[in-house]
Amino acid sequence: MEEKKFTEVEIKEGAPFAALSYVFFLWILTFIFKKDNAFALYHARQGIVIFIGDVICLTFMFIPIIGVLFGLLALILAVVRVYGILLSLTGKSDKIYVISDLAEKLVV
Image (cartoon, rainbow, N blue to C red; front, side, top):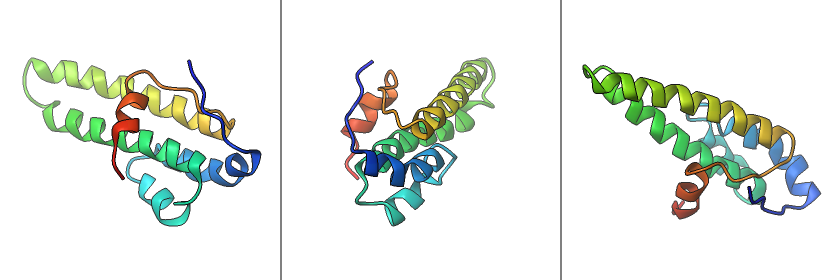
């Protein structure tokens, strides 16, 4: 996995907000309080993609038959969320398959 490079100061100051970015809609806090921190914004964009995925899964989860697939996808997103929190708290910025690609295309 490819890792982006950030300064030690960006990582140290942005890590708490980067970790919060993966918790439901708390990525908004990063855009309000740390809009100049590239490390925090990198993780906030991924948090947005996971949040949108969660909303889609919760919307379609209750439809018979295909709801099971969306339920499984929601579980996968939960694991990815925990992985993202661990990455942000350890100061890493590894790409998360599919999530990072979509996050880079976001215009925020």
